[in-house]
Each structure stands twice: as structure tokens, then as C-alpha cells.
Image (cartoon, rainbow, N blue to C red; front, side, top):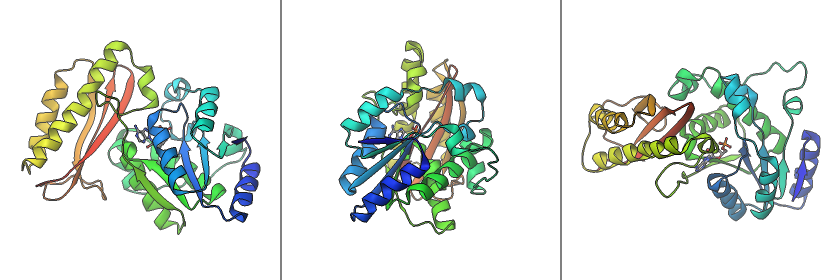
Length: 282
Ligand code: AMP
């Protein structure tokens, strides 16, 4: 595995691989690798011949400075894990490399970026789409991999790629969970033992919702009420939003008569967690 910190070196390495006819994959991440990241990398490894992984904690997508500062970072462990996972090229740019003096451009997918997480996290998705557009342009991969854990991000990136006539195929990878159902996240390591225990209520509530839909419940309000009741029993959890939406438009549905995305965000102590499931009616 090679590690590069400069965009120019990244391009050179990728060009050399492409000249050998290799199929190039990109997995963008913010590091602190867990099994969710490794699942994306494993899929890229299976489907492509040259796997590029970027590690960049992108300041532009953080709406709170303290959140950016406390976001978990572990470069040495990431490098070791990437090597073991069969990554070919690890790109670890500095903030100055990604946003040099005079940087002025913002890539924004309208409407979709203002819903769900975008309603409270001002500027978050434009930060994501700007950095992802830059990475896609630097690497020009055949395929780029994103987790369904960040379902809204996946939908927005797909929209951006179509709208900007970008060529990479975008692949969504299912959410990897802990044994008790908690979606793996770099932020989980910020939780205290009590908060970690409380966090399990999120997936429990989503599983109940999915079961209700599978058993014929068509009213999103009934789903929401049942979930809020379960989550409400956990005093450490403060729900930010809970929505039953169309998986493509991310707009709330009035009736569940086709697959829906049930998505939520909640504070567990000071840590913000998100999770979602797609529920299919009978
Ligand atoms: P992050 O480093 O949190 O920005 O995540 C990098 C990529 O890994 C994103 O595409 C995420 O959606 C994906 N990812 C994060 N957590 C998980 C998970 N538990 N399962 C699957 N993919 C994930």
C-alpha cells in the first residue's frame, strides 16, 4: 500500500494504475476505521483492481466547531487497517491541500440537502458534496462506494453525479451493525458506558417500525408514535427528528404503500447519532 498526502501524487498513482488497465475504486472516509468502513473497502476490493481510500475529516461539513475538534482521529491505526484490508492507495490530505488559500467554490444539491439532517445541520451537505466532488474529480474512479448508514448522503451524491454528468458508478453498501444492533459509527467511541447502552434503543425502535410495516401498518403517524414511545423510555436520548420518507425524494409519505425510508437522528448525551432502515410493505 502507498500513502500520499498531495492531490498531484494521488493523480499520478491513479493514472499509473489506469494505464495498466486496472478498474479503480474510491472509498471516501473521515477515518477512525470500523467494520462499516472495512465493509465498503471489502466490496471495492471484490469488484475493482485498484482501491483508493481517502481519509479526510472535512471541516466544511461540520456545523459545529467543537464537533470538528472532538471528531475521533487515529491515523496510525487507519493506515495499519487499510494495509491489512488490501487498500492500494491511501490519500490523507491536509486541510490546506483540500482548501488552499483563496478557495471559493461550493457544490450544493438543492432541496435534498435541506431535508432530514440538512434541516438542522446548516451547510453540512454542501460541505459533503463539495469534498466528494473534489475527490471524484481527483481520482475519477470507475466506482465509488458509500454506506447506507448515511442514506441521505448516498441519495444526494447520486443526484450530484447525475446532475454534473460525472461518470463514476455510485454503489450503496448496507449498514454494518454491532451485535446489539447499534449502527457502527466512528462517533460511538465518544459514548460513555451508559450512553452506549442507551444507544441500542434507536435500532430497536427502527426494527419495531419495520415489523409494523411488514405486518400491514400503512399510517406513518402510527409508526412515528410507536417509535417515539420506545425511544421516550430512554432518558439519555433526545430525538432530533424521526421521519418516514420516500427513499428517493426524501419527502414524507402520507401512506406506506411502497418501500419507505425510516430515518432518525438523536443526541445521546452530547453525541449525535443517526440510523435508518428501509421498510417494505406486504
Ligand atoms: P465516515 O468516515 O463516517 O464519513 O464514513 C465513510 C463511509 O463509510 C460513508 O460512506 C459512510 O456511509 C460509510 N459508513 C459509516 N458507517 C457505516 C456502517 N456502520 N455501515 C456501512 N457503512 C458505513
